[in-house]
Length: 328
Ligand SMILES: [Zn+2]
Image 1 (cartoon, rainbow, N blue to C red):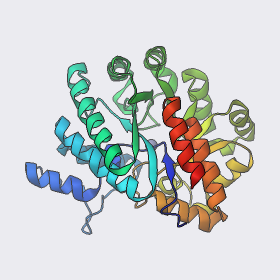
Image 2: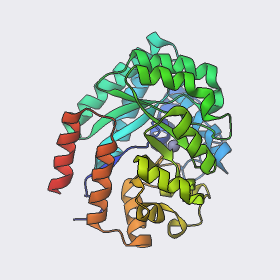
Image 3: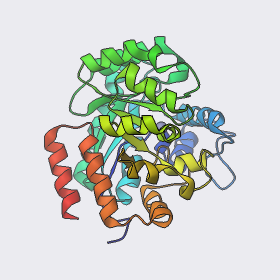
Image 4: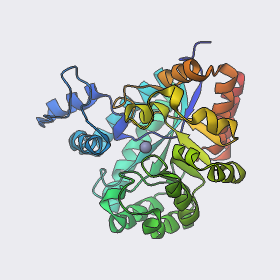
């Protein structure tokens, strides 16, 4: 079986960040929105570094204005994922970009996304679940409004709560109110840390927000006591090697700590983060891991079984996807 066809589970995908450039360009044309500076001449997304990436990302989302736009985005993203063998995926959704954190508007966006995701599941056999993420650099007060949107819409589809955006802004503890609200509503928790922040940011997220998964978390490798703690506690890392390499965190896949973390028995999973921005796909991630560390089909199967175990979904969905992975 080719790595492309291998059934895959993805846990860390920013919804707007997964938008194919051609989709965003088409929408901009329809709406006569000027996206100067967003694209390179070859049509790919243009950015210099992480902070610039965040601003290009937000500019690209300017064309996504209505629930209908988000329904179309749902299909565009899931078609791309399914094309790379993804059978189950979770995506970060931000009420900031979907109705400006207004609960009534958010319900409409969520409904549109969920309905299209159900249609895609019927058409392509791919399952989508949503994780609401406040944007860290928008601050803790806006995060509370976002958490309220999440808490009020928790259900079969919306199952998680996280924290995205610029890790350099504020501390996880600043967001504890929002995370408490999400936890009490029954949402499962994850948080970006240990990408731009060092090991302490991972410690802070685990201790102050009591998350069960960490987005990235790879810089835990700089502190082996923390690595042991993550392994012991069974904290799952949503590792996005291609993203880390594209943003210059590591020189190449070969220099990426995912293999060392895995050897030290940390539960690692593999995702694409914002795939078109980082010129990657789930297939490419697997090919690069195969080339760098000789991971084979058995390694990928173990990886995907760990991912579905850590997925924020109900047990019936988990069992169904697990059977799919085991049968491959
Ligand atoms: Zn991310």
